[in-house]
Image (tube, rainbow, N blue to C red):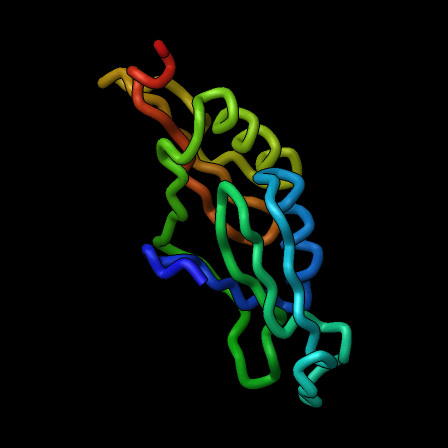
Length: 138
């Protein structure tokens, strides 16, 4: 496990498998899933995600919330992908996430010359995506 920085871990309301598959479609990478059954958990359906991981250009964890967990509710937090890849890739990620999500603030050039925008995906995760002007000119 890479411990180089914070990695989001989303507890979802029974949608972790679908979310991980969707994020893999958007960001690429490999999905690894361990089910409740694999973990011998009896507090939910055996096919529920006990631990899931997307490993690739974007790394994150997700699981289906158990009965004692509170599923994801986000307010006042953005998951930043600023400069996480080349501008054309970041534009594609923004477009892909907005397909079944909601554009909060369009991806656009800012007065200082850099680009950013905010999109809330279908699972309630809000992504801040952007790049510096110098990257767009390269």
